[in-house]
Length: 219
Image (tube, rainbow, N blue to C red; front, side):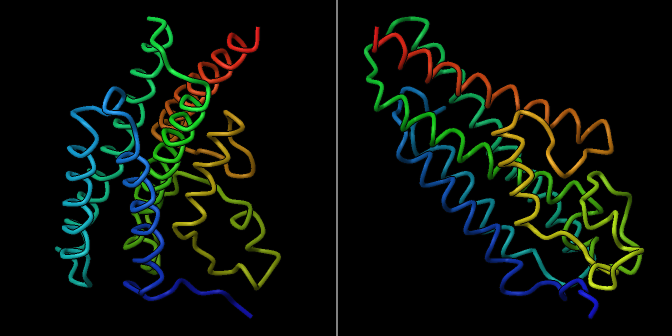
């Protein structure tokens, strides 16, 4: 039985990315003001406005689809830049020997990684094959990522018309964050490779500073 791309927009297609963004926004609100750019509420408010705008413009009219893509990019980049900035501020705290407990460092490191994974998952989702709107077309735009299912289309009717959805890209963001490299999904374009490199560097730096703080306390 062939798996076909779901008609767009659907409740599931809308709910998955918005739920992930809500979790990322909550993580930002729970951060210390010290590592939140502009305070804990400024960037989350911008992201909420962008999310509401996305709901409003994400329709079936082609012109609205193009606007929705721009809003998705803006929301994703805001999340990625916010996570990167928070990681830099947390590292600065450690280098300046600010009084931050290990428990707090673990919590803040986890919050940063959540925002990072959601931001890059959203960015990959829009970048690849023309975004969610482009993937419902008979001939999607050029691929930025190559999934395992793409390799077996010719051999399995189950994946003959398979197209990735948001959770597939969120998985790519999480595995790249943890493994610091691609796992089963390969970047095909220089843009995709640059974005994955960006995410890996921020992730490595965050893990390193949290672990170094823990080791120093245990000495």
